[in-house]
Amino acid sequence: MKPGVFTQLLTQLVFAVKYRDRLLKKEIRNEVFSYISGIISNRKHKSLIINGVSDHIHILIGLNPNDKISDLAGTIKKSLSIFINQKSWFQGKFHWHDGYGAFSYGKSQLNDVYKYNTNQEVHHKRHTFREEYLWLGIYVQ
Image (cartoon, rainbow, N blue to C red):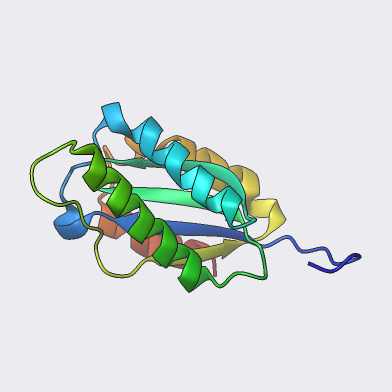
């Protein structure tokens, strides 16, 4: 980025495990989230919070405007699939569901979105992934 340029682009990415399989067990999530954070940092984004449940993840970042969201999402999903498959945490191959969600937020929404992501386990005792995904699309408008 050029000197004197300032951006604040808060974006949340949401990825689901293929077939919504519940493969991201609690025991592996911290390692998975740390790996994602490394990818984000290497691409010059700012990792704000990464969390999720067994069938999907949320990644809230300060977006680097020199990187396309689609490229970032693709890199995270591809690299993470390779990482998880190399770990042999379960039988068969790990895959992400096709696509992703990308939601943008203003600074005034940051605290609420951060808290929301922190409480994924509690939230998903009451709401399905589909309900959440639809809500995220409405929430940002």
